[in-house]
Length: 251
Length: 251
Image (cartoon, rainbow over all chains, first blue to last red):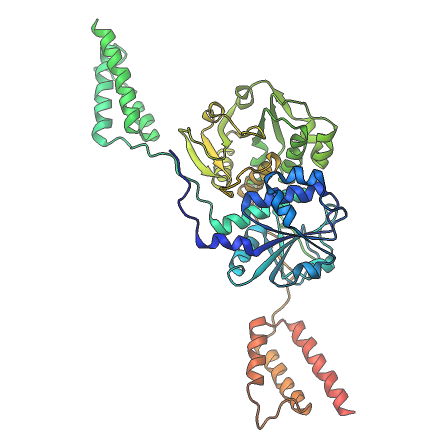
């Protein structure tokens, strides 16, 4: 009944040119959860810089159906190795104090990443669970990306931060169109007026409406159903109810 | 040196009127991670509908500094209890097949939530880890919200989905302004021309530039530094380098 948009925009394949780089991650579980977050958004390339522990069984479990990303992940000793070949480097940062480059929110940074991915590789870099990227690491980035957050506690879990960034990358690359609800044809003017006439007759027959003293009843019904923007099927249902009342009154 | 925007917009406090509702959650860890995700975005109200297990030590650990949200969470037996008093109900759904209400992406749904929170309470509802909300549960929602995702694997971890929704709620309520980078005054026209003149003299003195046969050297330097939009301090650094070369040549 519902359909996804039949085709994704041509920028969608740029997600394959954007690598996620995790630097000195402490907990293998976060690496696994990162792989799952990436897969849910169509990102495929993961690079691990000197993780404290290599991905283990926990990591694979948390990766769920993103386990193939974990398996294909590159593991390198230094950030420089991870950034080789990247035409644009973006580092996630809570609040960079010492940073000479551009500071963007994660939405703008994702849009910039997708623009650059037309022509070259892009690296989106995440620091440690405890303290993020160091100033030296961030200095290797052209852009510092920030996730808007509660100033009193801006510390997202690492994989949660990757999920937000991956989500913004997907929206930037593939759009955020959701399939539309099934078409419910709207009722036409004459169908709706037919309903009101019917309602007036029946309500009168019920002695609920006194045509000599109608007060505000019909205008209120018009206001209610006008706001609801009646569909044809709904008009049919309401007229069916009225017709049933007519039957009962006629007995 | 850097400052957060000095004040949040008045809509920021609407986050306190938006409750996160988790329905029949299996894993206490996801409840804890949800509390953390909420706190990072300034959401405070959590309602648990018939969780399989009550929050345990794992949940508290994963809640990190959001543990107070876990502690204040309401636990109720049915979804109806959780929705009591809500003026707008939004259910997260992967791909609703049987849904009569509006289907919005999570960004639009968050904007709608914040608009409604001016006048009443809003509930944002998440189903189980395995299968989300049932059709019956979703039918109690006015809006089905969808997170744009990889059609081949749209299954975000529960707490990751909460993180994305909470992020969009925060952006909708409090904006996504990031503090600006420190002001680096741009160099003026005459400062930049002074640099080029100096460079021309020094490069000539170095016998790197032959004024009789300048080729394209100076235009190329103009192109490079023009693109970089030189700052005053950078002009000073470059002229300092040139002056040092002048000194060395003068010896």
